[in-house]
Length: 112
Length: 112
View (cartoon, rainbow over the protein chains, first blue to last red):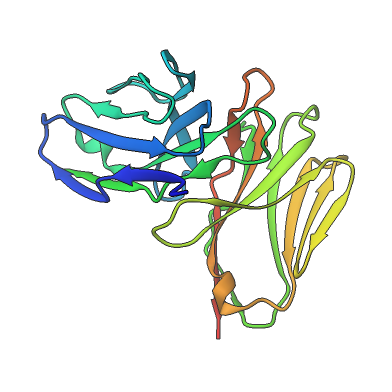
């Protein structure tokens, strides 16, 4: 199993550009999450999904959108990128009753 | 007041020292706590978990909960340079399935 994979690893965007961060998992997990991590601030939940076709907002959803058309994939869309979206983005997944969330390697995004 | 608070550090100690990493929490109803370890430029991975009823030991690592003071600790004995990482505490949110409340993470540096 590859676990949770994320692409790209790094990206530089200009202000106002858009992009999609890709996340996929091959563990047949129902629950998937998108976090952002800023220095000294821990993990902030952007969006989460409890299954295909079901998504919900987390703590910091503004400026982002998600979709979940399959169990495996959970892309995160940034529209009109702003410098405040410069961060490291992590995707994670789990199943009900599991002890842990499984994280991908992250995407480092810089908006200039 | 944040629900889970953690000093971001950095905490720098010499190799072989006993390390104590700590978090405080605000809600006495929290009962299950996790410690994640995050190496530089990687996603977090579960290190260990414990319930509020006491201690849990795994090799050189011990997780401890003090319910009376709402304090959780991770002790590392005989610390090694390979223990250098950011350590995040987390607990499940009471009002939402499988969302976690995260501490800010403490960056630990073990000097050879």
